[in-house]
Length: 65
Image: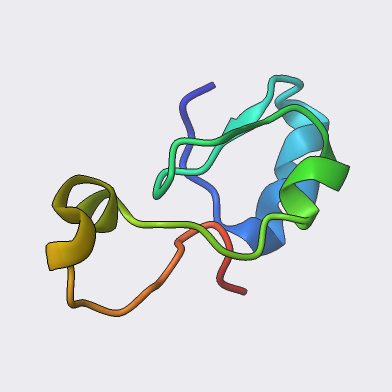
């Protein structure tokens, strides 16, 4: 559907939107709640493109509660 939803609200949102979810930080796709509930860490877009040069904090938008 294109909505941006934080992890605590994904269960509620999945009742009205029956498609999969994508993590906006690491672009990983999830098709079930079991998959995204197990997603507790990932890399940010900056980490992905800067590689070893990246020095910022490791924060995941969808993983944070």
